[in-house]
Amino acid sequence: MPLKSVDLNCDMGEGFGHWSYGDAPDEMLMPIISSANVATGFHAGDPNLMDSVVRMVGEFGVGLGAHPAYNDLQGFGRRAIAANPDELVNDILYQTGALREFGRRYGIPLQHVKPHGALYMTAAADAELSRILVEALQRTGPELYLYCMDISETYRIAREAGQPVVREFYADRDYDRSGSIVFARKMRRLDPEQVAEKCVRACLEGKVKTVDGDDIEIEFESICFHSDTPGALAIGTAVREALISNGVKIAAPGR
Image (cartoon, rainbow, N blue to C red; front, side, top):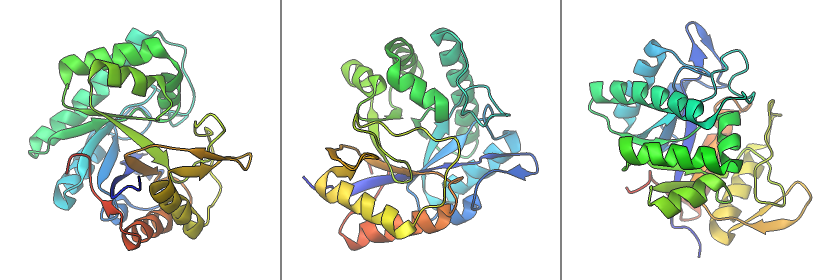
């Protein structure tokens, strides 16, 4: 069935001190989206930046999400670290707790947790890591949505445990035949209109074309684009406008 409503999420606060890694300022992207994934210090972000982005989330009425990563500031969280699952989940809880406190400062509840980059991909394939993460969230945030891919171990385990879960469709990433995104360390510049058409088709037909040229079926509740993708503002704007013009409402989960 065609989607009548979809969440539109984007990563935010991906800078450090005086440096910014995003292609467009957060304040320009914030009006486009319905949910924000806020960097929590391990791949990007610092306390002052987290504070600033959380305040913007409140001003724009956007859903607040933690975007925890591998402890890889130099590699922007895109390099996998050989650590045991308990250690990785502790890192996730540490980062999530920090962002939740900034939310509490401004009366903004934490909406979701979405692992970043290589950690997201590791959890997608690692049942033990996903299980320990879901068990931890059931104790510390049973109301929190966990963002993940439809085909991931994370999704399967979260559903079995009853943890709220949101499946994602990636606007600015390619798909392989398995239904997984093709992990990219460096993104090329994309045509915003082509990206928008891809998202509209996914919402209305439930299909996406793979890197091999095949169509596969896809299910999701949220569309993600990345603030560090070249032309992010144009991509996000084109996707939002195309969805709305095709009768698809933009709204955070549960709203």
